[in-house]
Length: 319
Image (tube, rainbow, N blue to C red; front, top):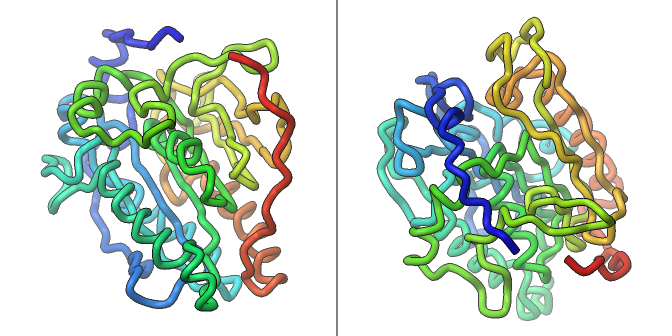
């Protein structure tokens, strides 16, 4: 498969395009942090933010803005309001374990940290030994914006043994994926033996007669998917802010590898640009929070028990 190595020179020179571009007020995260040494929560939220834009230097200045701007907290709060105990972990878009960004204080954690943490999660709460000890695994919720969706779709694909109760995609974008992360992924050697490479996560695949990328594929171990796409046309702004004209947006609807759209819902935010959809007060997040609250109420109705294993869809079409 051809690897998308386009440089997109216009997009890469506009500071208004990508999530986390402007300086923002940082707020402490209120949600309980992931702690595999304690009891398993009912729900575990894993969030990955996207690419920052000029004048910051991606990927080295990428940062975990979904946690910092309160988006993770907003999601955790609507789940917790259903009587479910929630823990969360946030990551920045990058391969390394950690780095320092000029956009935010403190160490930013990347995909290597996510993999390390999820290895601990699996051992503590999903292993045969933990189940034999009576541990009830948490429901996994994956929240990604922009490039963050690419990381999380790749994670779901390469960890088919982990059931994902809900995946949330906020305008998933592949722009500059290999340019940003290809060299560091090659050096980090994070790929799972026998599984697709993270560097290829944005390669085109043919599904049901059309070309899609990994960010558009909702894998069989994911029960539900909520997809947000930002506006295509100039418009007035919502409380989420943003720009009158949106220069970067997702167009391809998510799909199952079989070509089905089972369990997938989509919302096109007609007033919000690529960055604005990721703010907790946006129209887009309003829709996500309402749908998540409804889904979490269903979880609570079954006492927070993990979802039953889903029946795998028919075998996917050959790429």
